[in-house]
Amino acid sequence: MKIRKHLFGSLFAGLLMAGSAVAEPLKIGYSDWPGWVAWEIAIEKDMFDKAGVEVEFEWFDYVASMDAFAAGKLDAVAMTNGDALVTGSTGAQNVMILVNDYSNGNDMIVAAPGITSVKELKGKKIGVEIGFVGHLLLLNALEKNGLTEADVELVNVPTNETPQVLASGQVDAVVAWQPNSGQALELVPGSTRVYSSADEPGLIYDVLAVSPESLAANRDEWKKVLEAWYMAVDYLNDPKTREEAISIMSARVGLEPEVYKGFIDGTQILTLEQAKPILKKANGFKSLYGSSKIADDFNVDNKVYETAQPLDSYIDTSLMESL
Image (cartoon, rainbow, N blue to C red; front, side):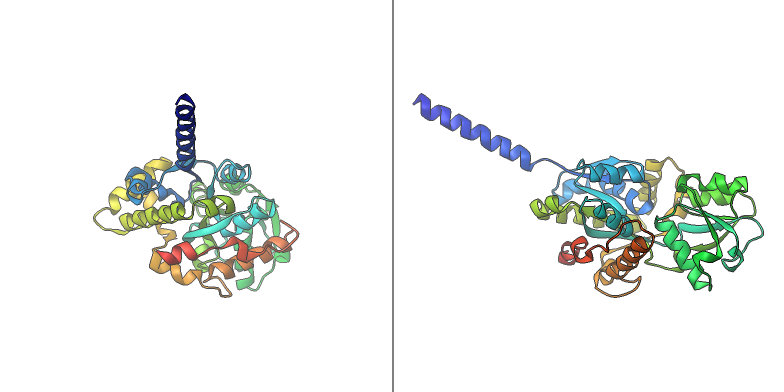
């Protein structure tokens, strides 16, 4: 009888351990970009509880979030589609399961006073974080205006330092995203936005990328995460709750709601209906696949990594399509 009792106790303990392992929350890293700060709405309004999934969000500086994901400390991370490829090329495989938004003006080329067009950048010094998404934005702007990279002089500047570098006069223009692009405009009176991501929608998609292992083990849970995301998007878009949603987002980054509204306006946060056409395989910026192929070519050309990435392994649209 004692033996049977001991075996039952061990079995019960094992089941409890197994249950606790299953109940481990999904760990997601996010950072300061409006399309990711919107996750805060779902956190604050208990939308994950409503969807029936346990999550643990961790706030990072952007590059640190990717480093944490690469180190295996997170199940998923919010990043751009181009950076998902860069992260994967280093061995931190990931699968994009959600397209949060595309940049719609927050990424900018800001020129010093007296320069009012991209064509006037010929022969000028441009501060940009080489190999990052701003560099791709710059190349796109130059090509659209009959110029190439050879027509300008690139100065490698970390994005968070671009406002100060423009103000110092070391360069004639900088490439940055909000809040840095806005800070450059404020810091340098007379400076001008000569090009932005609004001129090429889909150049930069912002996504949720999940480790293949976590996705395989927790597909149902990740679908619930997506359900909570679209609750948050609806809350932001509903005129009755929009002001509260913006207040939640602005509080996360320590800005006044009126200021943060401008950042949201420069980000096309996608409803499910808006996102679904982007999931189709196609060439060009209107497709996540097409945009990622352009980013992949850029990364190889600029020696960010040597070998083109297998795009099909990076994109799984099935969870979004099942909603």
